[in-house]
Amino acid sequence: MLPRKQLLAGAAHPEALSQLLALAETALRTHQPCWSGFLAAPVREEAEARFAPLGELQLAAEGGYGQAERRRLRLERQGSPPPPAAPPIAPLALLEISGNFLFDPAEAADFRLALEQGGVAAAALGDLLVRGDRGALLICSPEAAQQLQGQPLLVRSVACQLQPADWARLGAQEPRQKSLSTVEASLRLDAVASAGFGISRSRMAELIRLGKVRINWNPVDSPSRELKPGDRIQLLGRGELVLETVLLTKRDRWRLTLTRVL
Image (cartoon, rainbow, N blue to C red; front, side, top):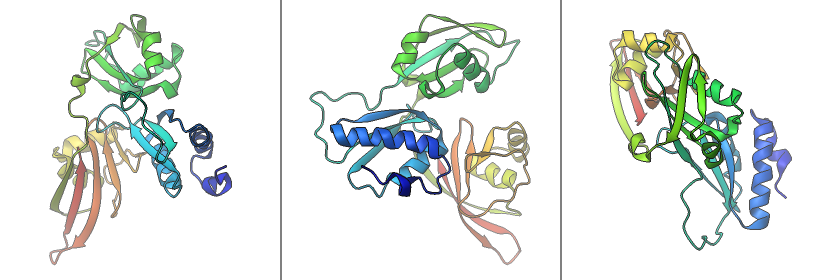
């Protein structure tokens, strides 16, 4: 048995971690890998950090593309023999949700709400990427894809159809990192994020106010929020920016080093 009390002590997401521990114990007992449902990024990262010292347990996460926030976690015994035929890296499916949203634009939350109201469990839904006024791409479990395929879906006032989509639509699967250096007058969120993501400061401030930006996965709506070294900035659909180091120059400006995860 795993040391549950120690692993859960002070956890930010004890209920979710407890469920993952049950999967881990099953994987260790049966020598067969177990997949979690889709996990929000803070839950997955906490699980990876807390389970890392368990030498007998091996973890891998997959969400369908490099910048995926919601991912499924694979838990298996370290050194388990590979299966006779190599399966896909994760049990994932990709669906296209098609509809005309020209006169009633929808956000990702609108699509997710419609799917959950239609009986799809949140744990079966991965990232949902809105494609302008034409609809969205949905990463989900194969079971959810089978349930949804060909079924009508009402998102806001728009009737939609769901069909399988080609994974090539999501582009590169592996995340890439890029190191950046910049000098800024302040450590305000809009200034740092503007430099790191290559977006004008006014546009970045607008995105922050619209709720498209998070700091360390926590929602933020103030462009003037001050940052500190180690802060991670997530921009919906554009990946993540990490503020690595901060140095005050002789002219009282800030020299920053950043890592952009694409």
